[in-house]
Image (cartoon, rainbow, N blue to C red):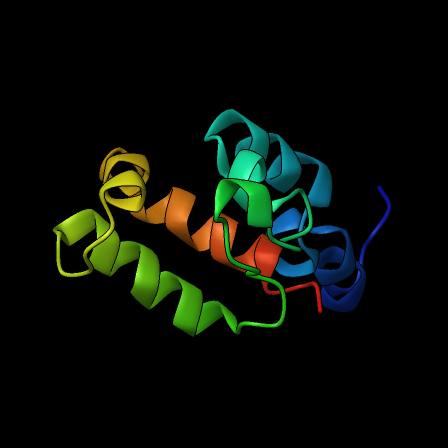
Length: 99
């Protein structure tokens, strides 16, 4: 039986290293890419601001505020309404990886 060190497990664990492929699938499935781009670059023609360069905590706070109706944007309120805390965490992690 092969033994693995905690370090090698952490490096292969998607929760620790991020699984961009699955994160990107969620970005596309939830419709984020239409307005914010696949790398958070934004889309001026859709009035979607750039998300890249924002930190994870900031993105989480904003998405939760949209979901709770504390930020006023009808489109984002509708998009965030059905996001779970796990979805919000995953989306924030993904977009915070880009500049």
